[in-house]
Length: 111
Length: 112
Image (tube, rainbow over all chains, first blue to last red; front, side, top):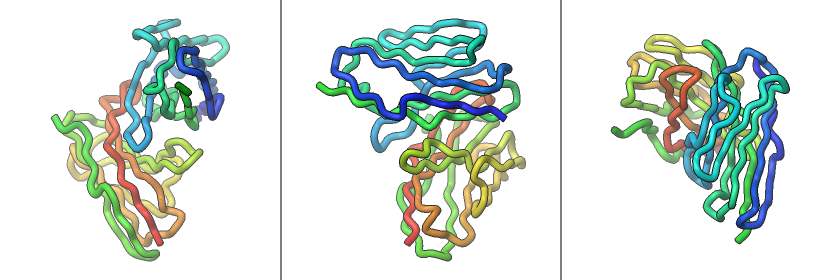
């Protein structure tokens, strides 16, 4: 089955810095890669996703890049703000296979 | 639209007691999932369903049972609760496996 590894487990940055979270996956046939944000005490919510026919996708201060050859995808957050502090989860899936989630990254943005 | 709802929000059980968690969605999604979330362990899939009347085991199914008698509802049962089942439980639904999952607000369960 699919295996997704997410790094780092904790990321601490100063407000205004950029943050990058990376996930690697094992199944080369995976073709859907979402990122979820979970604020403290809240439910996970999708913030951005990418499909395998696209190499990069942006939405304001967040972007996701996909390298199919190396089997990794990354979340980039620019100009971080305190409200970006949360746990971020990546996932990978394909076809009829249930998505596999990474273990999560706790992002702390210091004012 | 209410999206995905879960009841109850909190529950305290004694070891050996049983309970059922209810998840409901109003988006006509085929896929529904139950996860547990423990500190440092991420989201671990307990059971899932690909449609009304179907269920399948996930990563950590032991000690849990599920049923999906109606498309909009997915029930998670604990027959004999154990302290190791203390966790936050999230239900989710999606149109398909390569589409966004919508999560419920979670149920915080404590087993003493």
